[in-house]
Image (cartoon, rainbow, N blue to C red; front, side):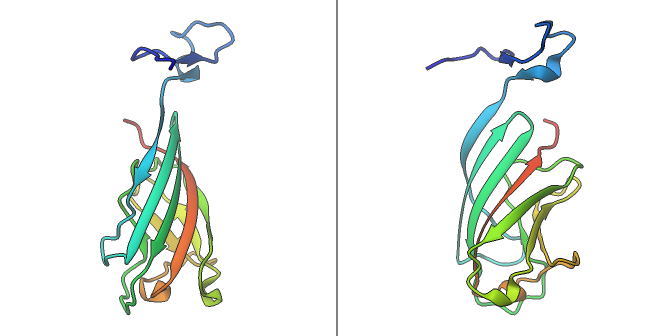
Length: 145
């Protein structure tokens, strides 16, 4: 195992002068699991994994929505890192019903959740995803520590 002391990392600067190029020092890598949640319903089951390299975060998730008629926005909370102002985008797959194939995944300006929207940008509701199993991933930049 290679262990790098705190405050040090892999230097990608051309000069090696960290005082001038601290943004070129890779000093943060993390991976693990997380549990997707919702502020408005309880998922039937939910699992997730993540990898964080520097400020870039990639999340993978699998969620089973319960049978519900809830009109609350279908948002995924419990993110291991909050997005920064740049929008993150992702993809969904393995949705077990083709009538909701227009679901898009995004992480917006400093929110602590992932949005599930249609192609026009309208929020999907929990009722739209009732009894559905979704798998997805998203990549975004994390908010500053």
